[in-house]
Image (cartoon, rainbow, N blue to C red; front, side):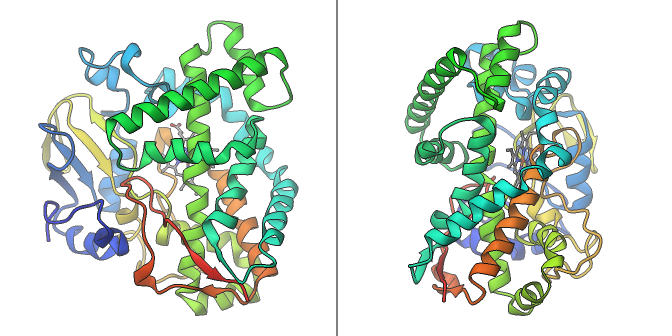
Length: 395
Ligand code: HEM
């Protein structure tokens, strides 16, 4: 098998990407592929060693304005592409520092009571149903309600956010993308205008104040960070909870172990992130210059992606990587990335994952899968690994 022989957006790939990675990893740790942008060379890192090396190497940069100065400018770059995830130092440091303090483990731990309330509410809303779509009824609303409360935006609008953020991470045509971005911008413009008039105790009001202060946050960057947090809040933790439940249901011995001892939950979350994590590939990186990397000649402007899912199943980094073992002790998984762009929301995602699965198992200890594995449909995204629906029988 090689990198050209499979459609990485296909259901066939998503049903079991790990077999594909297992075949390709030993032969092509860092492989050249031609499947993305016409005339653009893309490299993919498949081994743990290559993945970690790319993520830590500052010659692989994020800002397209630096790599393609003639084509990409502030004017034609959407605000989200001007957020911390898509820029390099010193802008990266400046933008990350504006929100960093709200996401430290200590600050996030204070949210545990409220997250538990939300999880219990969502669990009780499922009470009279025998079968549910676990994503729609439970895995999706919990992280969305939390990020909306943190930002101070109405979670009732979450279906709109979902639609707009889907367009950013799934395959879509340009017209559809532009239309969704413009709706998203119009929505944020109205929201930010209202917040300016009556600020509250929330992250969005704090950011607006910084922007009004002058030199630390430009207006397009304000929109960028809000969009990034909404998208990150919508696309990731939902799939930690849903992919995690699926992994447990398909490994009943591990599920029983966890049900018998909830103190294993934090360890279990780390293993679920490694085993079937929500982010399949990193976001785009670009070679700032030409150089030799892992024995390959990389040219200035080459596009680079890291398969976090493949790295986290590399036997060179994890003993028996295809086994789900919630008692696994040390897990240096890359599910949250590594280096400069290491996930800002990791403490929040871990806490939400732990609470959501614990509450679920307390309220519905006998839940089972209500579909054949082969019937489950995966979303058409290279970045996000997540199901479209997860039918679950609750009793
Ligand atoms: C299980 C859930 C999550 C996973 C697996 C995850 C994964 C990741 C990964 C892999 C990256 C780095 C991407 C790269 O280097 O290309 C990242 C960055 C980021 N994540 Fe998360 N994420 C999760 C949840 C969240 C949440 C809940 C938030 C915020 C509310 C968040 C906010 C961010 C931000 C702001 C960045 C950019 C950091 C930077 O550029 O410095 N993430 N995430």
